[in-house]
Length: 262
Image 1 (cartoon, helix red, strand yellow):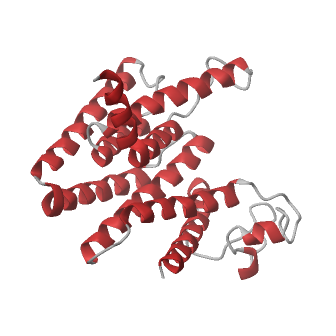
Image 2 (cartoon, rainbow, N blue to C red):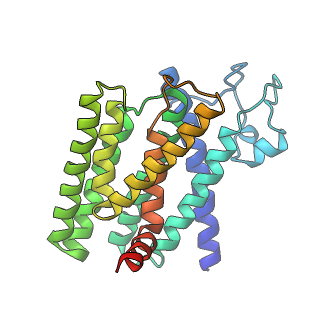
């Protein structure tokens, strides 16, 4: 029974990943989510058989059935990673007992789906849309309220709210003193979400890895001359990676660090 549930969660993740790909494309093009899917190159309407997550990409050998244009690897990558992410989150929450736990689980899925969108969209277009980050903040706030009032007490709520304020303030100061050259205001909004969702000390772990990974990749791109010193490198994807690391492995990292200094 458990294996069957994992299988359906994986399929659900693939479907959400496929939706995120559609949303990412249509958001940039300022198109409504209503209407049939179509090839971005030839605009031909896609059939049901063209839209099966991952499998259609494999069967079509990564090309449009109609114009033979290459399909971006983004599509199967987002679908597979979203499915694996959903499995990992479900594994953390399993077994789900009661409507409240199911609702909290769905809130977390919504938050991480938003992060997947932000990762890809900011990487491609250098912006974190308000229509994504604001609902994610609201979902995180509800998530923290429910955990505080039904499980862990008021201290948890205060912790997460203060973490959100301090993280937001830290990023706002960077934004203000660099006049937006150090990072964009979308990153400042994301910082509020990050502090609210993770709380202390997990947000510290998330920020540490965000800056370290960002520095390593940014330096590597400059050394390899893929980017120039004055070229923009979006910071949102690194913040998302830091959030992933802190959420899934924050406890292990913190305990390891404490074992070194104590």
